[in-house]
Image (cartoon, rainbow, N blue to C red; front, side, top):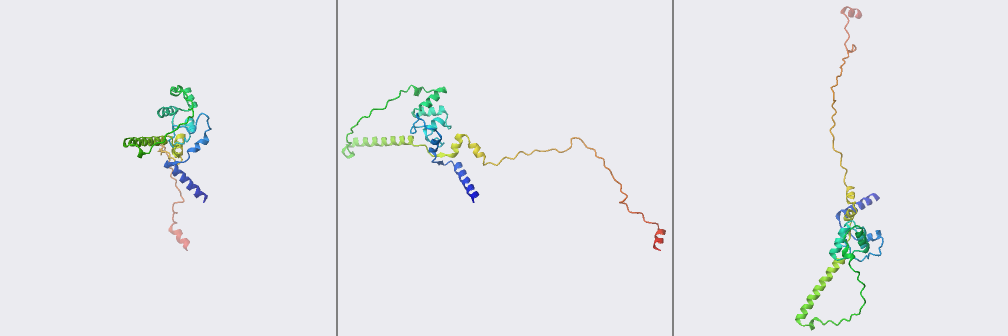
Amino acid sequence: MPKRLLAAALCLYTLVVTSGAPLPLAGVTALSVPASDSIDSSERFPCEACPCGCGTAEHCWTRCCCHTLPQRLAWARREGVRPPDEVIQTARDAGLDVNAWVDEPRLAKPLRTTVVEKPTPSLDELPPCCRRRLEVAEQAKAKELTAQESKTKPAPGVALLQALACQGVAEAWLALGEAPTPPPAELIDDRPTAPACERVVVSHSLASEAPTPPPPERRAASLS
């Protein structure tokens, strides 16, 4: 019974890995990376929409093996995201262009101000022209909020096969299920390289010959 359960578990594991179905394991990578003071876990990161196993900003910016450091910096330029300070320092030591973030001044935190909002009139109180403008503005604001939520949503589940490929062990894992290839057949020539002369000896055995019958006189004497 334990062997059957083990075989069933291995079959299920193989099915899950080969299917590429994302699993809710994005938070597991946070346990393998020590927390960093300069990297906020709520920041955006290049693998935020990739099921490769980089479930946090710490793991993606420091130990991502799906994207190289130049690719991560290119993503940051394209998305308008500032990489963490230690990533910028690492890129600078590697001779990469980080002027876009080094020259960028650090903005101070804005002061808290109290804003008094005027009550917004209802749509029925507005004239038709203003009502239409307000509806268009609300639709545009809703689309913008939806786009921001899609960008800042957490990373999807982890696809195990893609995570293995990210770590460079996918081919080794898949090789475990392959039968070993038999060696190629070789033709062996067992013919002698030089003619061998064998001496045939014909033996003459006297025991194999029939005895000579006695003469008739001796045969008659023996009978009498």
